[in-house]
Length: 191
Image 1 (cartoon, one colour):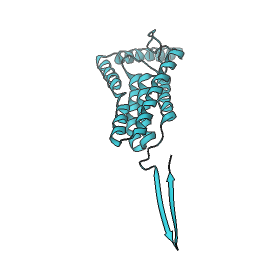
Image 2: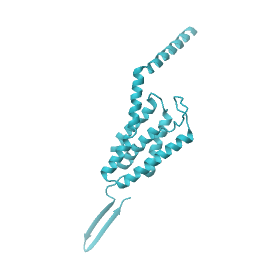
Image 3: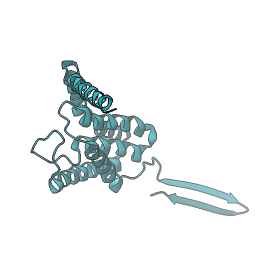
Image 4: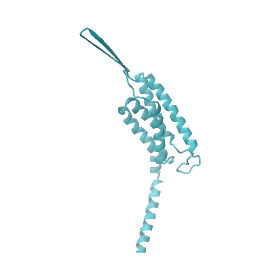
């Protein structure tokens, strides 16, 4: 029994060594580098699309809400990074891993689109933001762990929800009724 257990343990150790060698293969490094680089650029896509959408709709209120959300997100992320000073999973000594800045910026833009213009805009933006979070964990440098990415997502979403309201094209509804010599004018203003 001891011999079988020893054989199984040796087999598992050899298997893990082979797996570790596969993780460091040139193909794996190239794949992880590509994922990380795509995430580096994709972090800007949801916020950039938010800005384009705000401008295309002529949404002045949305423009200011987006600006306040971005500013609050960058400030909150920076404060949390320096206040918590969590070390990075890869062992670098620069710390500042929590929350993931890439992830918080991507989720801030995605949540703005969803909150302001609905899920039709939000779902694709959240998919991009989720990929950005994945790229922070899976990238070649392993810059973050799952907690860092979750913290970044929550920071981005929370700062958006502080300032963003749903978009309404028509804020004023007017109605008019008449009959039997009387007239009624109704005005409803939606906030």
